[in-house]
Image 1: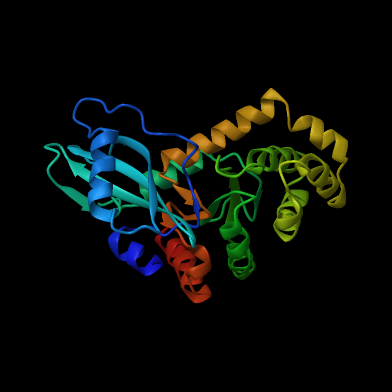
Image 2: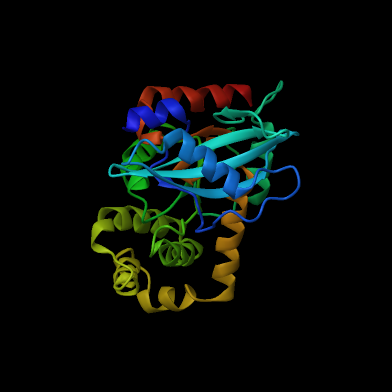
Length: 288
């Protein structure tokens, strides 16, 4: 089933960015949710094991095309699909709109450089900046963590920045991001230990015990747990998280983990060979 969906729609993402939204009524020139659902039913209605939900309908980055984001679900999990619908409503393209030009990644590199506010490690003047958008409750983030840590260890001269991007589909992710933000502002070194421990104990954390567990993790990494817990509910923390989420949206993050190497997007990180990740970083350093 998964192979079938991959062949039909692009971007396999294990932790999908939906932010709990249902599609708003379409503006002029955009397809309506009713039309999209009718299309999906006509296309996939034969498959009783597949369900689908329209997440958003909005103008795309390409003039004349509407971007329709759909969340598909089977017993194996969820994945994201995109349709780009022509202005006449008669045709659609499947896949991703990618940046093009002499310097295709420069736009996102600049946005990230100006907007990133997360904990970092590595030289500030590095020619390469690796940015991860992650969610502490996301199983795909946990699975990708060894690959990301391996990449950071193999590239000591690169700068690595973590941006919180909690998904509303996860019931304690926002709270985890708030705790992580407070830990990061207290100590970048403690932050990366906190993230590692959060992934290690991910299955033990629930919406009901998240405060207790996250407070204990903050204490484990050398901070005062109750102070971090208090910090997690402040307006300052909320503003930091809102800025991080807005930054992710501005560079088209649609799931976690998403990695950027000097603005180049890398998704499905756990499936990318270590030598390929290293080659991308080395190549970016030479371009700089």
